[in-house]
Image (cartoon, rainbow, N blue to C red; front, top):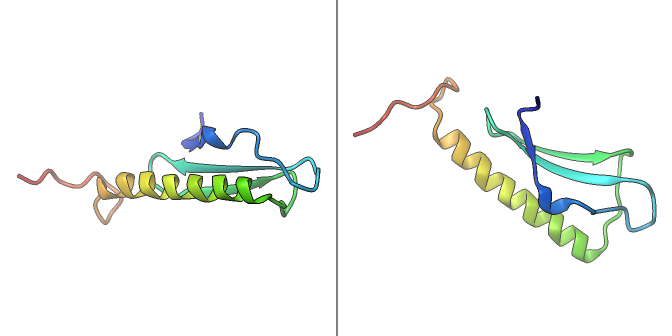
Length: 83
């Protein structure tokens, strides 16, 4: 089971030149790192609408990553409760 949660809103983003490539944005649910994957190639050509969708997915992933890391202390362990 993967610790990464993919952004399901990117389903269907394909290379604008017709190549069989895809893009994926995912957040690691334990440490809050964001993964941007370009599948099946080293580059992908996006039309303007798809580029906007990828940018928005990265922004959502960054927000989720900040929430994950905010609950962790400097050692990566859950931060102590503050009262």
